[in-house]
Length: 326
Ligand code: ACO
Image 1 (cartoon, rainbow, N blue to C red):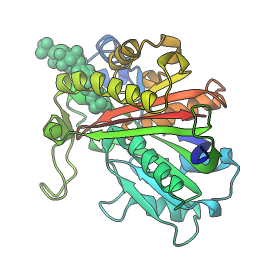
Image 2: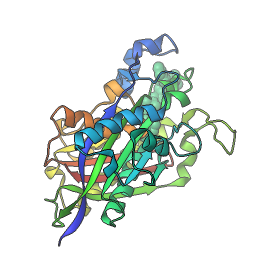
Image 3: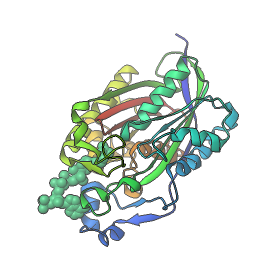
Image 4: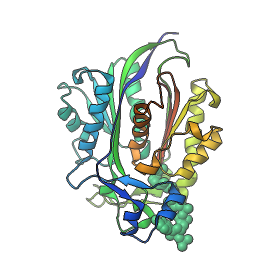
């Protein structure tokens, strides 16, 4: 049956210039390259300059996405930003991004706070708006400057995170309602607030009047992540009526190489189908998936027609997945 689908017609990414290697971190806290590499898969990460903000990273990624989509910014009907590191508490950073890009006045713009699951949440919202006919073209951006909420004296957390941004442009297209369609074929998002305290910042506007630093119960997060990511992938594959052997690529949230491999194995996917960027980017929260997608598309690895599963898990806890034919 004919239906409206949201096709990814543009992709973009941006990493700040400054790189911080594991050896650099070993000069700052009691750690070493061997521990970080083997326990997390991270070798280096990018860090924003002092006066470089989430909106700066986002605008760069969005401009690339608009360019690769071959559209004019006037065609954008909605701007959604997923972030936990907004420039200001209010207004939404997406409004600033819209103005800087030159998006037409009056176009709705809003931020989504779903931590590392932010991109999957934002993609779901944009897809819903497109399928309802409320937008024809959507800009979805994920951008984070986690370095600004990292306690650089805490070795348990500071080795894990990085800064970066990724973006996609979605456009309405007609589908047949089958898994052969191009575009977003299924999405599923979840949350479990009973896990609120296991991964959070130490402060916030209403509690401490400052942003606080990232704090987590690493082992609990680890355990939940493998199950949540697997559940989300399995559910969107079932919704889209496809099996793991039909999948060309899995783009999991990049939190830890051991989580990524564990999920790939549970889904029965060979390593070469599992996208890994954590080695040079670390965990950029909401940005890991669109960053990885854009890098792989730019390199010609992920191609038109490929069937891709995206899955993420983060603070909340939130988690979710999407099945997309590029
Ligand atoms: N360098 C050297 N040693 C370290 C470091 C470090 N940077 N950090 C911790 N250690 C030490 C610990 O102090 C501990 O020492 P001890 O045994 O003497 O007490 C030892 O290493 C082992 O620590 P564990 O916490 O048991 O290490 P584990 O194997 O669980 O790995 C990690 C920790 C990497 C945080 C893991 O639990 C993890 O990845 N959890 C998922 C959390 C995550 O990814 N959070 C990111 C945000 S959430 C998300 O994106 C889904």
